[in-house]
Image (tube, rainbow, N blue to C red):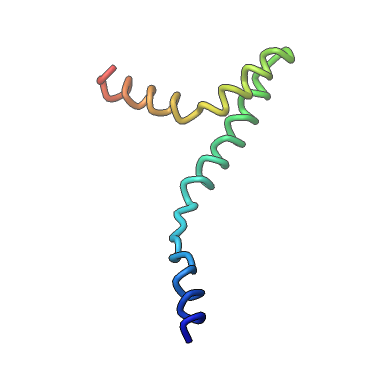
Length: 71
C-alpha cells in the first residue's frame, strides 16, 4: 500500500496547453514568408525576407503604434 502511494505522488500535475498563439504565429510566419519571397528580386533579398518573416509581430506592433499615433 505504501509503494502505491509513493508512485502516486511521483505523477506530474496536469498541464494546460494554450497552443493557439503558436498556431497564429506559425500561420503569420508562413504568410509573411510567402509575401517577402514573392517580393524579393534576388536571393539575398529572399534571405532578408526570411528574417523579416521571423520578426513579423514586431513590424505589426510597430505599425499599430504608428497608426495610433504613439510612435
